[in-house]
Image 1 (cartoon, rainbow, N blue to C red):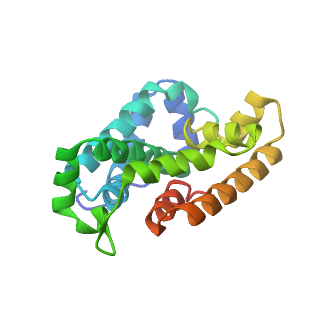
Image 2: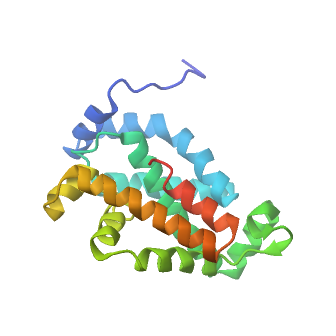
Image 3: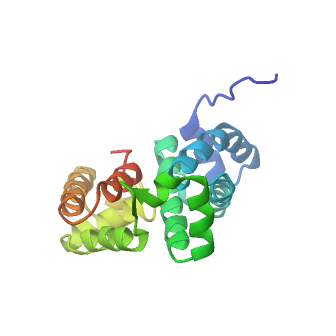
Length: 201
């Protein structure tokens, strides 16, 4: 039926099936999320062509790493977190490529300028990395496992042999610490990007 929303009944169950190599589960997840992730990524990159490439990379990564999905209980949060991390990687690529920067700038001045000043994405990303680096060792590791590797609280708890409540508490503290660091050392846009990346908590 045309123009009918594609609805998933039990996303966690589909992720479990996908982790077992079920191609029909993958197709269902793809059909449900591809049109939701596209606009989300495009709002960050402001370049439809790059946004489409990011989204395709997300689903390629999802299939390649399907064996990690059996414990995912919040598929939507998992996928949007993947989208945030992948988009940040592309922003880094854009910042290091003048041609890509000009292409994106031509499609959205607000991505490149903040109050008429050029945004230095390299510096913003560097500050986020610096803010992460100064976290206490365990807190930093938990944050990286959650945000960079996409592990669930339960997976992190098992990996580090700690409780899920400890994982959650340390993530909350990590987010507050990084946000505070960015507010002190960077622009509002850098803080906004960080909030988008970590919106699920």
